[in-house]
Image 1 (spheres, rainbow, N blue to C red):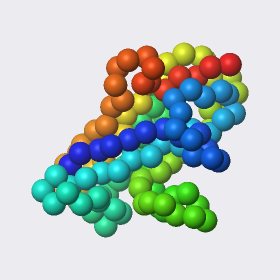
Image 2 (cartoon, one colour):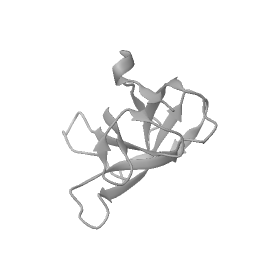
Image 3 (cartoon, rainbow, N blue to C red):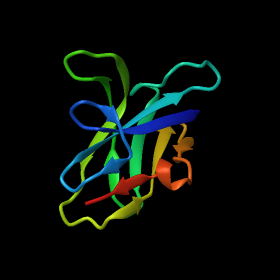
Length: 120
């Protein structure tokens, strides 16, 4: 398996990595079966979890997006940045698990411009 991921601003689903308190970060992921090249849905995976650097764990769901005018299906979960969240880089990873308990992980590039940033 291989996991592809990104973050978008909730609403217009605009690709972004910089978010302010009270904004909603949408984590999106696609998990590919490397043997077939097919995307894995909720029948092929037991879970896709976003793990934030502060210990928060978010369970993603396999859904069509954007709502109302579906352009694609992927694993999605939204997280509202708390009003009192400290500014700076917030690491995250996306971990996919299949029925055999095998996992694959997406980590954004280490460059600060690729990391999730919380700003005021």
